[in-house]
Length: 92
Image 1: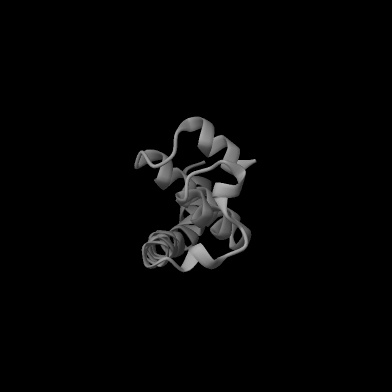
Image 2 (image 1 turned 90 degrees about the vertical axis):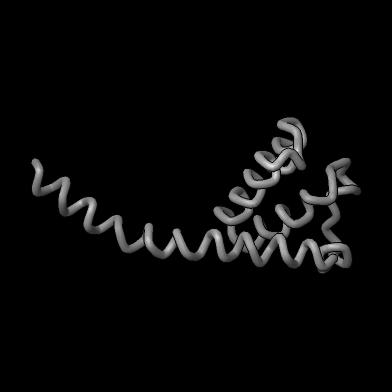
């Protein structure tokens, strides 16, 4: 049993290392683009759906990569930019 556990952990380390670099870097890029106003010119606007402006970046990111979109949504929720109801509406 310990050998199986060791092998399982060794196989998980490589993807986790990749995610540990990719997700924070992509989140940083998304929020910097949002601060520059890049998402204001997109046809997908959260305001038209009754959502705050930070949901636009989450929606666009979700279209590109599901995991990254949910990560940026969680960051907006934890940062206080979205309420729970708005976060659920954004996910739907």
